[in-house]
Length: 202
Image (cartoon, rainbow, N blue to C red):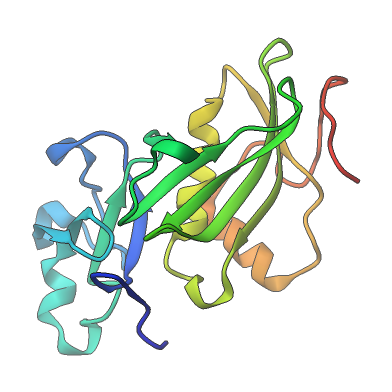
């Protein structure tokens, strides 16, 4: 894969991690090594403006010294309004729906001001329902974890079990199936259950 460059460096893998400090460090690396055994090093990505974790086992193996050895941590609960989003780094920007109650809004993932992915969703607070209606990552930015971060950001806005989640029907695509299989057990996957207040485009 060609290197992807922002204003201050090269794009790498990113994963959602809530909080700060050591408590947000995952137990396993992207290749599945247990970091408590193999060791991990903390760092900083100037490209993303985010903290990094490097698996020492992956880094010590020359054949594995690729984007999976080091990855960034982005807190999906930290979301900015469009007017207050930082100009640099990888950030989540919340764009509310025009129809305030249960309309479809979106969360964008922006890198140095440029949208590189988005998730569309409708949330109805009175009915405690949430519906994910779309997810897109720019083709040249896929397989870096952007989609996983966007899904985590959507769930952070209306956390289950307080909200009952579902998604619109999934397209018949091996790539889409592979993504959701990687994300894991998303509630209501492919079985839309909108409430009567939701204005969901056909």
